[in-house]
Amino acid sequence: MPLSSATQQVTAALSAKKARLATALQGRESFQRYLQVPGLAEDADEATVWANEGENDNLLASRAPPPPPERRNWTYTTYSFLYFGWSMDNWTLGSTMIGIGLNWWQSILVIFASQIINSVFQALNSRCGAIYHISFPLVSRAVFGMARLTLIVAAYIGSNFVANMLRAIFGHAFSDIPNHLPDSAGITTQGMIAFLVYWVIHIPIMFLRPDRMRWIFTMRMISGQLGSGLASAASGSRSQFSWFIMEAINAAMGNASPTTTNQPDFCRWSRSLWAPGIAQIILNPLAITIASTFGILATSAINTAWGLELWNQWDLLDAILTRYS
Image 1 (cartoon, rainbow, N blue to C red):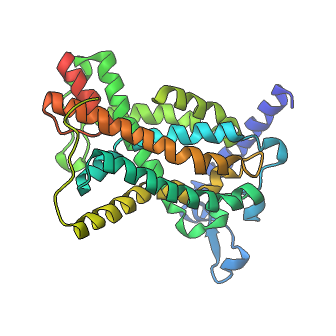
Image 2: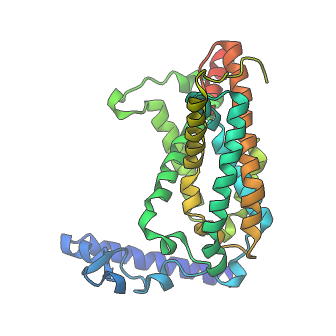
Image 3: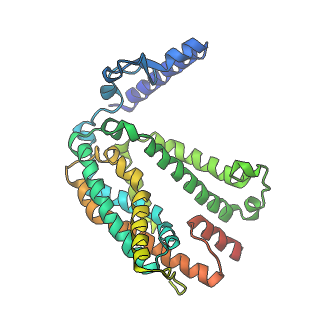
């Protein structure tokens, strides 16, 4: 499609949406009509299903259609980069294990075992996406909110790293900004500025379609990745230790439960049936174990050398900046 034609279509679509929104803002009833479309067959007892007006009434056809073959371009390499990139989010998983009562090497073994179990469920849950190329809401609409929880947590983590970047760039001009927010807000003025910067950077990426996001996972993997004083296991009976292990495995599996649940959202773009499965079963447990091991060793070394009790990456970076600034 020529660029000029595509631009005209986008402009026309934006104009139509702007006109519908302007009509919706004329009154309460018009705004309610804007938010309503005819109900689906399975929701026959309800008058409407809330969504944007102007779309095709068929939810499957208009909102989450199986992508055409030419857009199913995610390969084994794409999924490998995806899971390796995600693994860096498990840097602090080791602190959870140590907090339960395991030592450093027990934590590593438990994390590896739990992720093998979790990867099997990921592979099973992704089959409907890889075979039928349908999205997670159509596979299991009941737990759709878990994907939103993942986005919220990722936004919080990302904004903390942005705060580290702003402090590294601007120094005391950023770190000495006084806090004008109350304690009940749960965030400081510096944190809010970092969050807004993160969100502004994040918004354009949200407009990318999944079939055009492979380069992001490649870039994330490339950008992502000892010492004494390693944690010792808590003392206790053999029965207590067995429960430590079970609790640790449960915690480690729960850490990855949102992405396990919504695997069809990613695997529906698979070019071949087995492209996601190989990466899930083989690479995912290894990547998470490696990331968690780095977190355990590096953090234990810094905490011992400096007398700290920090596990979050952004807190460690902030401590480094404080020590050497």
